[in-house]
Length: 292
Image 1 (cartoon, rainbow, N blue to C red):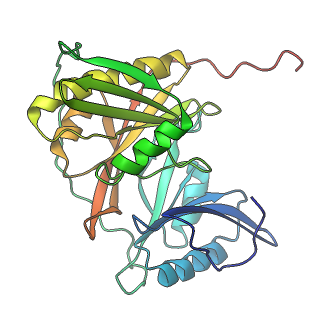
Image 2: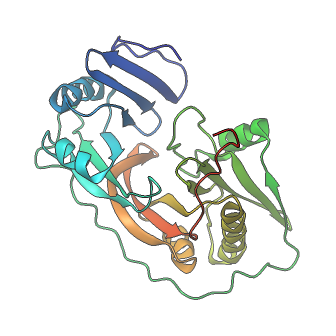
């Protein structure tokens, strides 16, 4: 994608990727109009106040509720100095270093909330040691076909409150599709082989207690497949008031490591999310080509 120095944003779908380079400022950002937020990928340290002012202008122009970035510890202090708040961490996100989520939240009028992002209060969930055994009659397959995954996100993403976390490809690149009677279950993963992590999603969140065992088995099967791919850790973003989904992640050994205020929208309402994290194993670093 061509480098851009313009601040005008073109309409081209619910999520767009934009580059901005001017002088010593060089970053990429994802604008998510569906969830009224913007994620920053910053490629150079410094000029934090200029960057903050830039995003404040976009937030006001686009009616955003939140701007956030994921950075290493030393960089988090610089973002904090210009009005961003630390809302939690993603352990091992950079393979050998944790990531910190730095956020700036805005009012309905587009003004930054002074004092930082309001604290998200969410109910705690303790995991119950349940069997994730395969329910009788359930069949499943792994899906990697790009077009099928795109269609799946288009049809299920809204109800699942799906929000892509990475650049370039705004969908999972691996999913598990299961059938049990008349029910269809989908769980997906956005993988990052360079850092050895993956973001997982319940693309069909449980609506009743009876659906939890099947989805728990599906998610565990997806985690097993990710471990085979040398994935060291996984994380997910779950609406703070989705108790069944939270219980499922707790049952599978996930732990809450971040609470993100007003991070997504649901039926015109801003919703906070909890970030759940789990280590899968000591995955080896990527194998280098033989000519290196």
